[in-house]
Image (cartoon, rainbow, N blue to C red):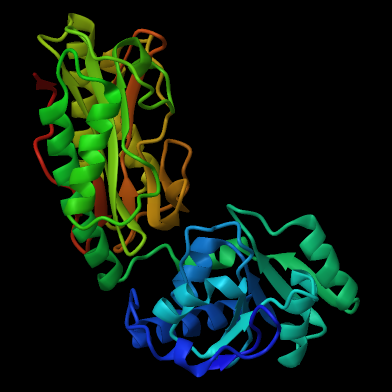
Length: 401
């Protein structure tokens, strides 16, 4: 293990490198295959090196994970050979648990992070040419880029976000295996939430029951905590539990995603406390029909826009006075709070992509009458060689409590 800096800039004691049992998310062979594909993509793009700071991409290529996603971990991928990873020295424990290669660095306190990244590039003979930057989601800052450009005035720095987005699109069997495990945790959480929800119970109690069940079922910390909204608040997008008491007659909207090795299997469900109103029932029927139509339309070689159009034909029955975001599916993969999406594709009428085996989607079919009610149903699916497999579990129906 090559360790280059501790808090004082020296080596870590050897005992700190041998007393932890590794917890790799994937086999060394899978990581090596990912690196080979990344370096082939770099060659095709004419890149002489790749600097990665997006936490999900760092994890994808190295195995390093931490919930301190703003900690500045920086992965340098050369055109040949293994990468090098730099992080804050206190984060070395996480690196030792998951990283598959040996070249690990701790940022010395006397050197700014961009300057240290430049040193890592220079040690690999990369001081000119085209250097790709992937800081998507969390951002490769302007200052960081400017420091690198100052260190290497003969180099060209380019946005290489799309390189790794494309690399991560098709999930491996091992990745899908983690999503299957996450789906079991999601199922436990949804069952706990629906059995807890009742008149007089707070939305926080429902979320707490879901979170506890999810953790007991093997989930790690999720990208999003369980989302629970009830009554009129369910009609407000991107809100969640906030000390509100569920009332008789309320509908309750749930969105929950168990997480295993940073892979999530999200699911949305709606239940009512007592019989649903005619409007809620009508919206639910339209959402359920649209979700089923999308899932039935999907398969290898199918245009993503065609699958979305199948959903629209059913969803229009919900009426014109309900709000829908227009997305019948978005790609998911390895993620950190607050996002399980990985930008790898969309099921929308304006999408220009064709579905391929190995693509994994979350399908959030949710309509809202703002400030009155919201209804939502979703599944997580994977495109197979001959169709589409739903990975999440449980009844797909409006639940009456």
